[in-house]
Every structure is written in C-alpha cells, then in structure tokens.
Length: 105
Image (cartoon, rainbow, N blue to C red; front, side):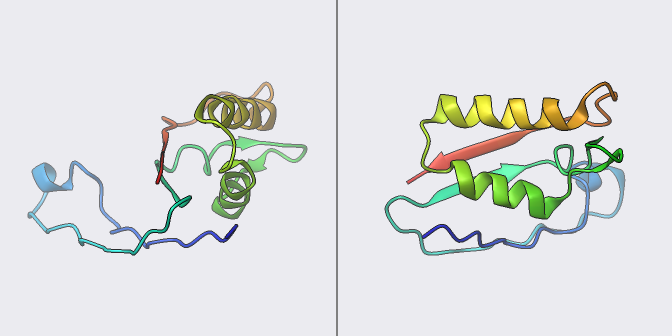
C-alpha cells in the first residue's frame, strides 16, 4: 500500500558474535500480503556522502526511494538504486560497502 514499515535493527555488528560477548539477535515477525516487498540493507547507502552540499543520503531518502520503485521489475529496481547512489555520490569516494537486497511476495 505504498507504506514503508521499518523493523528496528539490533545495534550490533554481525561480527559482534565473534568479537565480544555473544548477545542473540532479535527475531522479528510480520504478516505479509501479496505484493509486499522486503528490503534488507547495510548502512552504506544511507551513509554515502554526496548531493549539492556533500551530506549523507540518509535513511528517510532511502525509504522513499524504495517505496517509489517497489513495483518495478527487479532489474529496474537495481538500475534505479545504482543510478541514485552514483548520482548522489558524484565525484566523492564511496565511503562504505553498499548492499540492498529485496524480496517481493
């Protein structure tokens, strides 16, 4: 329904299970409907510097972008995401790994 619902992540690195005292990750459940899309992503996209003032892309901008493309075929979504981050970044270096993974029901 063109609404983005965010499940809050645990604030620990994946490697935390190896690096420090083991703390279990939270299991979260959500009812899905036909047409829903689930996106999992690292912080790299939102944390990328760019734009006219060299600021971060930010999570709200990423969520709006995902809502705007969720009905496109997967390859078009990939192209749109890649184009958006490259246009945002401009001549600035990529600051982190970027992963966006989507699954549509």
